[in-house]
Length: 391
Length: 95
Image (cartoon, rainbow over all chains, first blue to last red; front, side, top):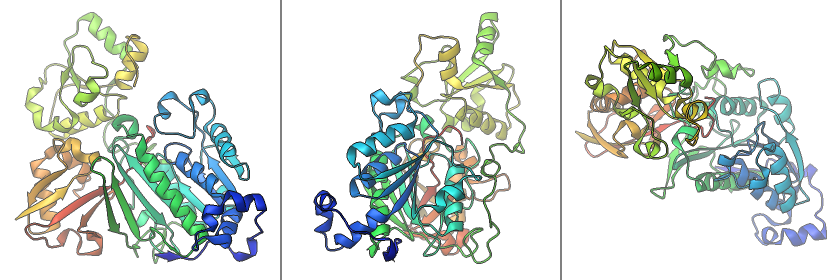
């Protein structure tokens, strides 16, 4: 859908000779030209998250000459981030991500003003922070912040340039409720906690956020320059492994609770509750064992069924002692392989998917004792067998 | 009638790693129910406690969301393809 520039002409200022030289390849494009570059200079873009998606977003938007970049992240750089979060380097490990990102932006383009927000975006601060910006780019990694960003953007009338990744697959769109659908039109509510594995369990190929974040950066630039065909009303799906792009139609949902005809959400809500994070589920909690408690049971010689529900390629990283392997996706259909007279302990990487395996078995009518190893194999490596790596 | 269902990576652990599976039925709802019967471990991911389709999964027939068609009653014919498009969030272990 063709979208007019989100930057009013009244805010444009002249480019210096130095800027004209720096941005000459933009100025040579008739669709951007001097005026488009002035709009980029006047523009204020908020990037939520400086991880895999935020990295190319910040780097390309800085290079493109966006005048003001806000970056929000409360996290610190970890070694396992560096496989994909190319705005941070090895020497930045342990630093706040916003500080590291600011250094990289400065290195690319000192003309860019950077506003750092070393905080978690919450229902309390989101409207104040977002109100100052023209476009928001969503590079978050969790549902509660995604819904928060979406709702704040709808309430403030801002475009929300969306990207999301998992393993080899990415999604991108422009949610701009004034002109088309919002994230809630597509997904009215998030999956229950733990139902969909996260990248920290499922993994992600490092270049994928590079592709998706770069697509987002392009959409941001188009919203600022104006007159371009953006992803408003379209959902782009990308599969890196199959190397396939697909495009799906995205309709505005007249029944959308926030941007529909009769909205029921008129202010920001409690997103922890909405995402089911601190709401006791209708189900009874799963019994857990810590790594040390499990070790004690081993040492006592207790009879146990240790069930590792990880996939074969994960078991190749770290094997768990005494375990039988039944992948998560086969637990219910292999219920007959369990002995209900012996307690069963379920193991995964961080103790999330194993809860699911236990619930699937309970759903299937299993009556034996079931335990979840709290924090998974990583806890075993941390607390019991320190020779093992954590991954 | 054989309908192809395209499975996103997030759900392939429940289809023996397959990216495409076949199921039968005359409507989208019928096809999805047949699919869930063939791969029982995916049931929990597709349906909530009340048997309703979970709202974080969209089903597309061609390039159109079935919500914009006739929902689960949308008719399908031999050779059609359905795509499951779940919400994905990325890296955090918080959610």
